[in-house]
Amino acid sequence: MVNLMHRALQLAGEALAAKEVPVGCVFTIDGEIIAESRNTVNATRNPTRHAEINCIDYVYDYCKANNIDYQIYFSNITVYVTVEPCIMCATALSNLNIREVIYGCANDRFGGKTVVDVSNYYIQSYSLTGNILANEAMALLKQFYKGVNPNAPELKVKKDKKV
Amino acid sequence: MSSEPPIKRPKITENEIDKFITGIMTAEKNLQAILSDEYDKPIPFVKVFVGTARDPKELSKIIQVLNDKIPLKELSHLKRVRKKEVLLCQSQHLNVLTQETIQEYIEHNSPELKDSFQYFREIDVPLTPPKLRRQYLECNSKMWSVNFHPDKQLERLFSDSFFPEYDLKLHRTFMSLVFETAYWYLSKHTKVELQDLFVGINIAVVVDPPRRSIVAIGLDNRQGHPLQHAAMLAIDNVAKTQNGGAWDADGAKNILSGINLDLMMHLKERYRQVMFGAKQYLEKNEIREGSKSDSPYLCTGYDVYLLREPCLMCAMGLVHARAKRVFFAVDNEFMGALKSKTKLQCVESLNHHFDVFTGFL
Image (cartoon, rainbow over all chains, first blue to last red):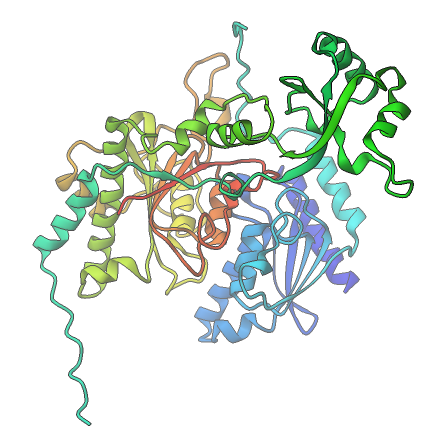
């Protein structure tokens, strides 16, 4: 379990190096990695391209190419992700009947449990465990937020605003 | 027992669809903002003690002492005085164990006022400040005087004339275009009847309001891909106008790459006044310092028109995308995350909030 989270952390590190929000994720079946990814929001200019969404796409394409019933396939997957899935990803994982989600640190800004508990609104299939190598995951985030997001436009400061 | 004949759904002609779509465009009913439940709930009350001043001339002195010795703190939205009565403290501040009376409480906390009050009574007052004029009037007349600072934008959202006629026409035009798109899309796939427009699929149209231009359209593909709901596709199509995109992103990237070309030709014929295309995207190094031309960023400043209320995945996607406003026509009773199941736009801790409007039908 710790090994799989270490791999997810490596991917988060790659995201940081690419100036993306450092979140990494591996999808596993019986302890074997079947998909892995990281945030690609800035590269794609698409704010929904979180690590989990990229993995879901990859697994779905794999199922389609190999004539596998994706609904059964997803229901056997355990997700390791360095940060608690956001509300969007939590809903997507829930809709896909994922078996289990294990995360590093909690997500106080967007968490699909911490900020809005998705399971209050939709039937949630997966069990959720947190706090696995949380400090490592948090350290990466802190490093990122020390800098500024290079892709966000500069804040417009209103000058000469009359009071 | 004879079996019932199968229900015959009347065949809908193209003419009737046109009438329906024109209806959405031209109706005069204003739109309805979807706001937090807190405005509908009654304001909670709390019990307080008030005392009648023995000598009304002493009132200003009494208040000075009280504000110093027994400040109101969390009840600062309430006026301290009403006529000859002075608000003293919350009833729960009295010591229950010693069965402390309000007179004893005053003597204990502010001895100089021990003879200032003729008599006391306990009343209910609003625990939280009123947010709307309606709530304010309710509080003020019944119970106690309340401070109130009206939020003009909020008051307007609650009135049924939020959008001036010109804006309303524009929003209704874009929503009718959503239905026109749904009709076009369904007619490519199945034999369409009017009822089909309301179930199964969603359509998302992203508009750049100042230019009144359609930036991107999402045509639902959830049957083909579990993530490809209309709003998620629309967000990706916006990305394609900004040199990005993740789904089938191999094509050309330009200001028109957010819209299916066949569909655009179809819509151009019917909506001659509507523009198509995003504002030119500029890479960081292309933006000259101090220049006024700014490049689009995600869905910042964009309005999103949806046929149906989005699910929580799509709604959060639109938060991530920083959409400016979200309009939808049909409630989504089982999955809807902006009205039906929850109201994501009212979660204060999120880093972005958009206004949500419905009421097109």
